[in-house]
Image (cartoon, rainbow over all chains, first blue to last red; front, side, top):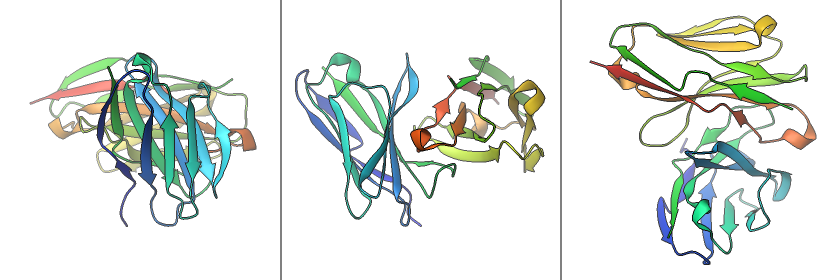
Length: 112
Length: 117
């Protein structure tokens, strides 16, 4: 089976812009989660989608949003980018609650 | 609240040495899952193992072994006869059951392991 894929792998944006990141889960996985990884804060949970519904959300401002499509693919959007949004954004998919999360290679976002 | 602590920030060993990575977790829930992930320089988190709170059996997989002790809330990871390819950041993570916790892993800060030839 193909693993989790994320596009783009690298992105450079300017403060104030918005960005959309894409994630395709492992075939058959209906749960998709997003995480932000920074040197200072480590790995932090953003949100989780299942069957096109957001089931859980981390402690991030409303500028961070996401959605999931009927084919389980997911996108996350960050509006009005700030310098502090520079991070590695990781997408993960899983079969069910408590099951292992399988992560994609991530999208490295740099905000200048 | 849940928390995972990996007290060792960095560990450096010489190839073929054994090394243990410590993980201590906190949760009041009785049903939970513990995980270890490896993050090589490429950045992708690689799943290594999952343990549920009702299964305290230790596990061995090749050179890797895991020791889960509920009495001390620890889930330690040992690499036997380390190799240069083991160099990576290792994360311990906790997942708690419940509708408000779906998809959410609570990660420790990670331990950077450097294996020198």
